[in-house]
Length: 276
Ligand SMILES: Nc1ncnc2c1ncn2[C@@H]1O[C@H](COP(=O)(O)OP(=O)(O)OC[C@H]2O[C@@H]([n+]3cccc(C(=O)O)c3)[C@H](O)[C@@H]2O)[C@@H](O)[C@H]1O
Ligand SMILES: Nc1ncnc2c1ncn2[C@@H]1O[C@H](COP(=O)(O)OP(=O)(O)OP(=O)(O)O)[C@@H](O)[C@H]1O
Ligand SMILES: [Mg+2]
Figure 1 (cartoon, rainbow, N blue to C red):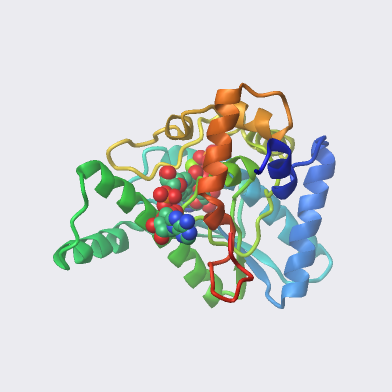
Figure 2 (cartoon, helix red, strand yellow):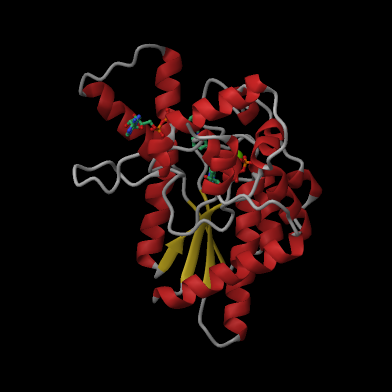
């Protein structure tokens, strides 16, 4: 049976955290991977949340440092609102901090709505309005993936993902949506460590302290992730940092980890290598 300490090891959460060291290590990772990839650019969706702000600052810094060595590299930020985004001002603040080489804004509403209407026309009916809203949320996350990969394909770029240990342990991402990426510079970090890294890199305090939200549901705009988890990030982070955890909390996390194993693995196949 998988234990708290197996998960800590599997997700690569370090026993101690030195913010300056982590910033340097993660910048070095982005630079060396991009250099060896044969490509030149990095693409990332900027939501106005702290994860994409942090990854965006790292991405912009990494291409700047590569350019200083004579390698031609750029960071391409993408705004991907579904129509009008309630916290658009936070996305503007994130972009002002990151100062990307290039910014695109792609509205995912037409593609999301067209997919949904075609499904309905084909006879697909969801069980309830709440289920429809949830499923449409995952369609939004996958439309964001489609837009980022189209931009990457057309600009010799790699797609950055923002998954970190606190989302990975809960499987809190859309499979092949925001879970799809080429590089994960925040891997292994707890949410509080992402915030510490963001503060170290100069992110505004309002974003460092912002309430995390997937913001995928029309029926619950800006719904805090913690509502969906039924747990706080403090509890999830304590679990991942090896602290002593209330058994009820540990049981919820262990159950989520087991139920979402397929999202952290390659697709299952009969050749046996990729079973979860
Ligand atoms: N045992 C198994 N083996 C292999 N595949 C399995 C499987 N069980 C389900 N599946 C597949 O996985 C699918 C379900 O996964 P998925 O489609 O991802 O859907 P699901 O995990 O149900 O929903 C995604 C969750 O992630 C949250 N999210 C999404 C995007 C961003 C963020 C954020 O933090 O910003 C959070 C979202 O709020 C929601 O709670 C199933 O429809 C099925 O196709
Ligand atoms: N409206 C959006 N515009 C652009 N990218 C988005 C948008 N919503 C989500 N994304 C992308 O999907 C990723 C996953 O969303 P997630 O909510 O986990 O991260 P975040 O918004 O950056 O931070 P937080 O989890 O604290 O809200 C984001 O980091 C971003 O790359
Ligand atoms: Mg968010």
